[in-house]
Every structure is written in structure tokens, then in C-alpha cells.
Amino acid sequence: MPVQGLGRGFWLGAATALSVLGAIAAYAATPDEVIAERRAGYKHMGEVFKAMKAGVESGADVAQFATGAGDIVAWATKIPTMFPPGTETGGGTHALPAVWSDRPGFDKLAGQLRTEAGKLQTVAATGDKAAFVAQFKATGAVCGECHRTYRAKL
Image (cartoon, rainbow, N blue to C red):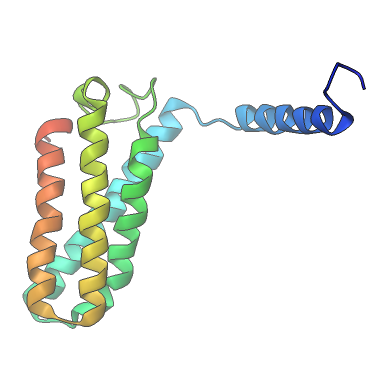
């Protein structure tokens, strides 16, 4: 054994892990790329909400919105990873410093969005318009709370 108690398998695993970490570091996104990705994610979420609102107002079948609600669930799951240190400014960000200074509060709201959007997805799949409207409002309320606290007024 090369080092006391550490076999060849350990060293091969360690070398592989270092190679993977090196590859990840080589492809790490720049702050502006991260900001662009998060802006695109929020834009998509806004488009989904806009389509849902129009559908509710026109009396459309709400079952069609289950996929869009699933997109919001997926985005809400990703939100906490989209605000790493170094992305506080630049790239047209509208994030307020509170995102970084009150990270527990920000992450909590992202979790609440994921939960409420999950309920929205479930309700949409049932086709129950009244339940969908109520859950749409509850989901939107989480968005509004986050905007008031963590997003600059536009």
C-alpha cells in the first residue's frame, strides 16, 4: 500500500474526484452568465404566470397549466443556487442586497414558492377552476412577498 491503510482504490477515486472538480471549475459560469440564467428563469416564470392569468380570465381549462406549474416548481428548487457570491451586481440584476444579507429568509421564500407551486400543479391537474384560482393567488402572494423584500422596484 502506498500510504498506511490507503489502498489503490482510494487513490484512484481521489484522482477521479480531483479530475471532475477541475473540469467543473473550468466550466464554471461567470457572474454575468449566472445573472443572465436567473433572469431567463424568472422571465419564463413570469410568462407562465401571465398565461395562467389569461387562461383564468378567459375561463380556459386549467388542466393545461399543470406543466407550467411544474416549471415553476423546478425553477423554485433552483433559485437558491442562482444567487452565488459575486452576482450581487452587473448583468442587469434587480436583486437587492437583502438576498445575500438575509439568505435564510430568501431561501425560505424560495421553499415556500416551491411548495405553493407544487400545490398549484396538483390542483391544475384536477381541472378544478375554483381551487386553481385560489392556489394561483396563494402562489402569486409568495412571489409578491419576495419582490417586496428582495427585488428592486422597476
